[in-house]
Length: 516
Image (tube, rainbow, N blue to C red; front, side, top):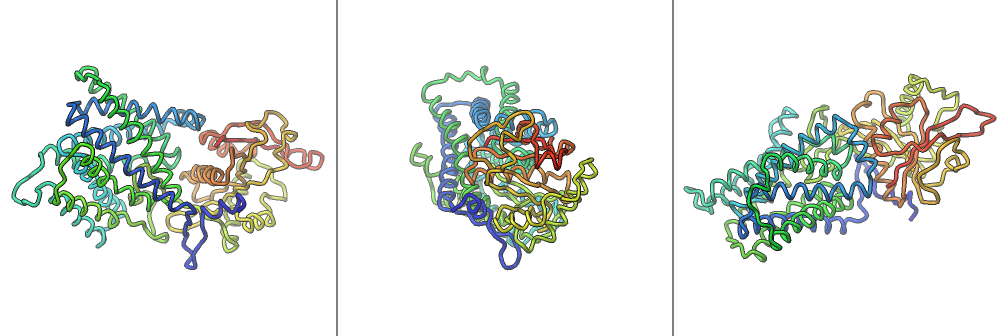
């Protein structure tokens, strides 16, 4: 199978009704990875229960140390793999403010409330109470869309409430059988999970979950350290405490994210998030086997009811459902890929809409002062060939409208040889690379993050195709595209000479490359 065919397979084709369907060639691997990620999160909860219950470590100390250590690990991974994107986000003041809010109200609040719930109950109950955040997200989504909850959503609400009542009362409806503090912090953690999920939508779409989570943990950890001053809490760090903390950070945080994100890539965000809901079960089992936490049938029944709630409140919207710009997508799991856009391989039936989008792009370039001449790029022949080869992609909105087009090819470009560089040089030589061609956004969809989405999708397609880097070029006058490329982690490599200098002396482009 060629690299182009691999990219086609991951994107899928349109079904007979015209809606986008996605094929995942590594489904089994994705399901296994998502399950392992859920178990890693469950292991993290058990480590917390061990430290608070047996070693008497305060929740606030655990929060500060965990966030700072986890942030250091995440940022180390980012620096090794994609330090240019990290530098770019540090120059993006608006994203940094959103990430700071996410770090405090999302990450920090989630950690304190979730770990406190575990401290007063156990790992399984604390984790499953946090899952009630899906109900908060469901109601927020309904509010944003100005609609009442649907029947299936109300069924999910009933299951969630029934499960919570069983866990809190142990079946004795007249009395509370778990500490009131445990129930309180469990409910707070549910709202914190909603903040955690809904707040970072725009930064996640722009910069991806690893960078956003790493910076949010760092900011949340710094705020927690200043507020709680962990060095004053009198914790004597023993080898046992160090082992448990490292388990939380390496296995329960970094390992969980790595496996879960691989599950999202291989099996899709919806399947991965549903499998991720095995986290409470894994926490209950690990806690029972490792710490000897007693498991009673009524707790199992309550947890089962809350887990059964998940599919009712996380069902994905149909592609053709109308939504307004401010709508919040339904929950798709931790470290999710929340967004309003999808991409798919273009077909010949898309030629009219693609042509309209490209015409918008040509008009926009003229507004920027680009002299394109009579031969605009791409030509109809080049466009048709890209569609036939499966290297042309269409970006669709949640309402199913085509809003952008781009191409990612893997064939070496003769115009990208070093001899065509007027000044500068490429970052790599002799390595397999992908090329992003004619990324164009429809006029009425500009300045809504579509360009950032295209750049992210191009990265993903290039990685799937085995490329070590992705290259592209643009007109010197195309300032918006040049700024977007730099913000996304591309490096400006120099000036390219395109075409035959004698015939077309003004055809110069600014060359860009990003290491993958």
